[in-house]
Amino acid sequence: MPAETKILFVGDVVGGIGRRTLGALLPSLRERLAPDFVIVNGENAAGGVGITPKVAQQLFDTGVDAITLGNHAYRHREVYEYLDAEPRIVRPANFLRSQPGHGWCVVEHGGVRLGVVSLSGNLFMNPGRHAFAEVDAALHALKDQTDQVLVDMHAEATSEKVGMGWHLDGRVTAVVGTHTHVPTADARVLPGGTAYISDVGMTGPRGGVIGVKREQAVEALVTRMPVKFETAEDDSWLNAVLITADGPMHARSIEQVLEPAVGVS
Ligand SMILES: [Fe+2]
Ligand SMILES: [Fe+2]
Image (cartoon, rainbow, N blue to C red; front, side, top):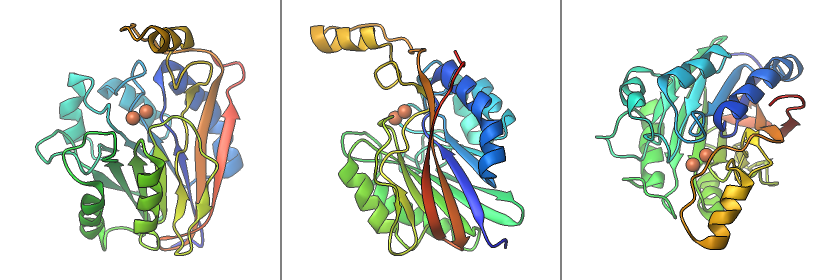
């Protein structure tokens, strides 16, 4: 195994603007940060909600190694079969077993096997099963198949995310939070060697309300009436973290990567 393994994890890619931002910034980030693996959360990649096979393929074509999902995994019916067939895309492991797709995968690069686990929080979310029990089952299944493991804890409540970080400290390389689309300022390596952040943020339009056109989101908040939401387009940023592992299931550092997509529209 190499002395160091670098994992770039990119927060929720939102719509076409998010995909264009990723496409525009990834080549220079690769040069500057030299990640061995690039993992992205793609739950908002198609039109701002969900993902389609075509959009997933586009992400893989930009050199993404694996895609994680979340509560919007099943928005587009045409992705159901793809979720069963494509090993590199994962929906939360604590969804029901009867639901399409699978909850973890293993991708390999330069002799390093990286396990990627997707989870959904239980607080204010509605997965069919319990995140804490199912992550233990996932790690048991991945035992002996992986050198590093990254867990995407897609959850609303910071308490549950922080709790998951402690639950997995020393057992996985990284626990990264997604779903709120807002990056948190608590990135750190926990004492057992697990890199942790409560939320990576999103890759998409900061000029909206977590991805939605701000005038529509504000109208819904003000009037308490249904409003048709469209994806915002302005002020797109890439939000990610770079995790450097210096041994099996052990991180040395986690750094935030917060980049404006200048000129991307
Ligand atoms: Fe999201
Ligand atoms: Fe979400």
